[in-house]
Image 1 (cartoon, rainbow, N blue to C red):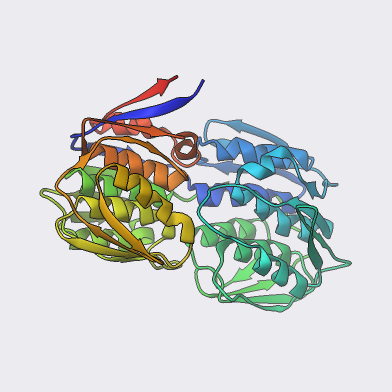
Image 2 (image 1 turned 45 degrees about the vertical axis):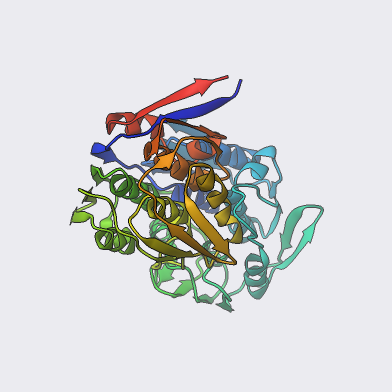
Length: 418
């Protein structure tokens, strides 16, 4: 039995959407629970496929994990299994974030190379280099990252690129290391701040969260805690783009608008009226959006995760847009599917030029990753006729209740089983 979405074009999305915890945060917070013996509780968890997959990874390491609604309860034993090579590891990229906690707590780790979205090369060189600076020996052997240390010590770590994953792994190893670690050119994403807040609640000593320099003073041990996941800024921004593309009116609650300042400013430039409040915002688009250029960059720049929505918006805007992708080369696979829908788009290296058309045309399309899948559904809302979107398991890895929210906003979308 396979499933796909059938999306009827022509809807103007109007209404309210509540956004829950961030996918790009909750999985890392679950991994951080490995650092302390006892029971850690994480609330506001999104009900997406990746959460139970991460739970399986933690169970393979010896943890007891229960998930009830939006609450994950993780009981970490005194003695952890240091081998993270279960089948679940190959299904999500974020599983590699157990590397830092295992090295920090067990002083050794065997972590299977992760799977996840097909968006381009994401090597683990910086993860390994950072752990080596802390005193670990790390190599790739038989499809696994193998790291071992007699003991970890503080160090000066410079990242060639502000990698979120490398920052997280080095940070989580450093909190239990002897001495002080300074991570320069660290990632600055709100999800990094979220994990720093949780680690501080557990007893870690961290300075500089949200800046490009993290200073970590190692402590002998951490203790369990309860932590609420921040709202998912990528999901919130998705609904913002949905309002602009469908000339709609959507209020989004549960996301700090400061986390997507640049996105909202781009939509204002496209002609939308944007108002913000505490942990909510509203996007209203009365007429056809105007073309806007986008350049993906590390936070606080325009997120690469939102590049498919930038292309989809450009495809129905008045004028010509240029989208520049600086992070993941395979993200432009999305354009091949947009062309099926009648988009006028061309790529040249890491640039794409999109000339807007008044209306797209329905066609069968295939999602290559989470955001591409959601982008294709939104594009289908701007097409004539019914668009069928396949490989929808990608979408459900990142968007809880996606179809239900679309219907609540006025879209005609159905799940079709074949």
